[in-house]
Length: 84
Image (cartoon, rainbow, N blue to C red; front, side):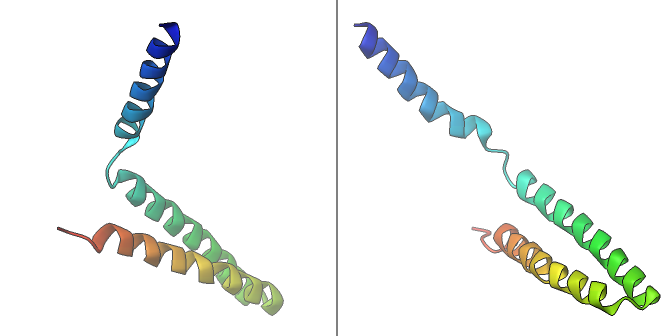
């Protein structure tokens, strides 16, 4: 009997937890804002490196920026693509 009650409570807990964890699109919007802040920091580092003439570091910053732009675009697409 104890096993049945424990199993039932475990099943109910597993069914309820995803519903409580869902926060709508706020998590995605927060992710986009976080990625945009990272891009802003990398862009300022890129400008600083170009201004100083450190072109190897600027190349490195451009390589860091490329996947960040891709990630932001992917997140925006996920947010705004499906509006049914």
